[in-house]
Length: 180
Image 1 (cartoon, rainbow, N blue to C red):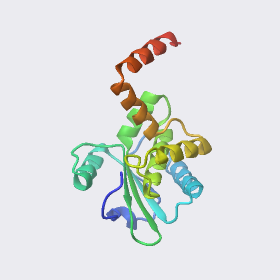
Image 2: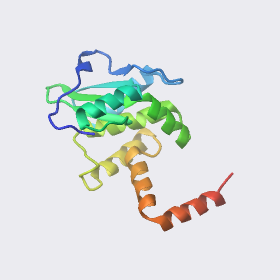
Image 3: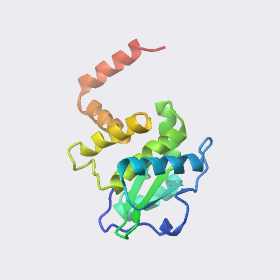
Image 4: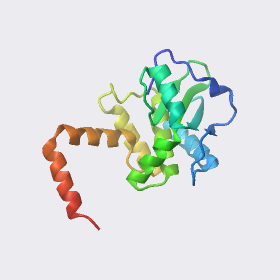
């Protein structure tokens, strides 16, 4: 999410690009740091980015403080107006692990999906107001970076299913028909 005021969080002074505040099995800090650098280059995003992987409790606090929403969320982006600093990204390790389990991929893969989503917000994209521009850019980058279905696409598909009961019904039927 993008905030008004464009102020990065206090953890921007840390020298690490990825800060693992919450341990998750199978998640390697180095792998995430290398991925973030590769994604930034692919996007041509200038400036340093700090990524904090933390608890849902801290994400709830950040979301309440900066967005006035009293609930945990998966990823938050904090763009910066400071030269040479693109901004900060905060990610809930717990929500990432739950999403990964539900989608059938690793927590590390899910963290990469969330990092990419956060980087797009730092680059100025806003999927809530851009008519699909961020979703299209995310899809291209996911293909390039070999990532599974993205955050916007998942959310958009789920919302469509909720708004169209017949689509939900046919999706359930086709899922049952394809069980392994």
